[in-house]
Length: 193
Image (cartoon, rainbow, N blue to C red; front, side, top):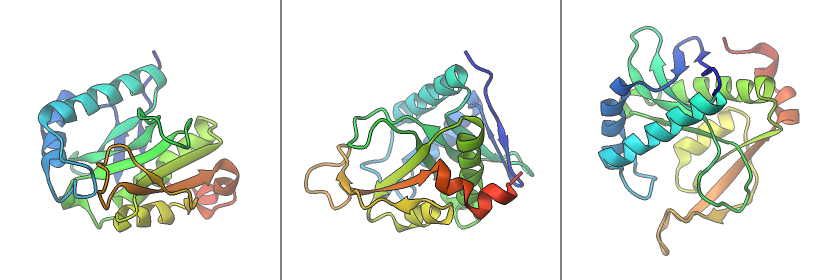
């Protein structure tokens, strides 16, 4: 067991999951707009499995996909964090940057702000050599976040097994960010606390 890490940014707190997060996270995962680039929406049992797995990751390693809330109101907005993918993917082993926010919190820069802080933690505190992120090629909003935080399209597209054969979303793109590249970035130089 490790001490769970929390990350504070100017506007966000990334923290361990609470039982009170279950209902809003289930609503987020059942929203067809939020989940439009995923293979399907999630049932309550599926969203609870996510929370249980991520809570375990944070308890065991200190880090994972954290519950994200706004600092000013304490409102739960989704998750932002790092994880080791549970599916076998062609570029494994890896650590993945991921995020999913409720639609009401889109367009405010929260995914970018939280992701930059998570990358800082991954490279500076955890000593990771590389962090990846991926999504269906059609998910331009998520790809834009990856690019804003300094990740680079690796041009290593792959078929994600979560999507059925023939689905337009099955072809995914992989983004990478090396520790070396991150250390040369403006984000590494200035910080985001």
